[in-house]
Image 1 (tube, helix red, strand yellow):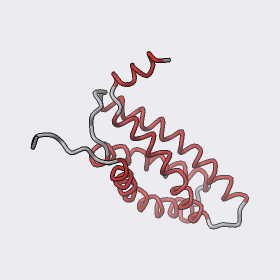
Image 2 (cartoon, rainbow, N blue to C red):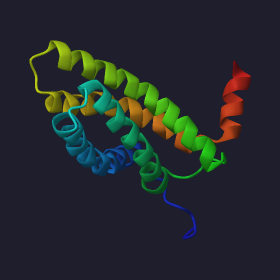
Image 3 (cartoon, rainbow, N blue to C red):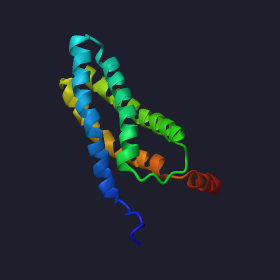
Image 4 (tube, rainbow, N blue to C red):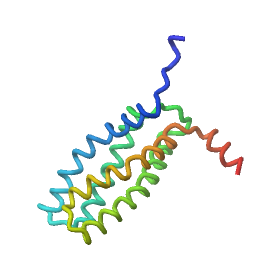
Length: 145
């Protein structure tokens, strides 16, 4: 029994997921500020660059520290599924950010923080599915349809 690995609860995984995003978030705020204020980059383009950087970093943090590596899919396959899926959420994030910064009288960094809160739960559910589902589970789901 001692060799049996402890299962991590969904709540603990969510907390780990949110904490795992903290380093890239703390990097993202100053990066966005530098790109907008010093590089004079368009806010939407700067934020797109920031989001892409965050997704790549977050995959590896989630892979190593958040989710149980129960998937039998290769790392490369999980990486691309994660990146493409999370980038779909990030496109929604980017669209909300771009519209809000253009049409609302709210500071762009406040909008950025608000978006983090809004999209975190959706990204967690998706990331959990990608990181923990096995290819045999995926095949069973496809065969049921």
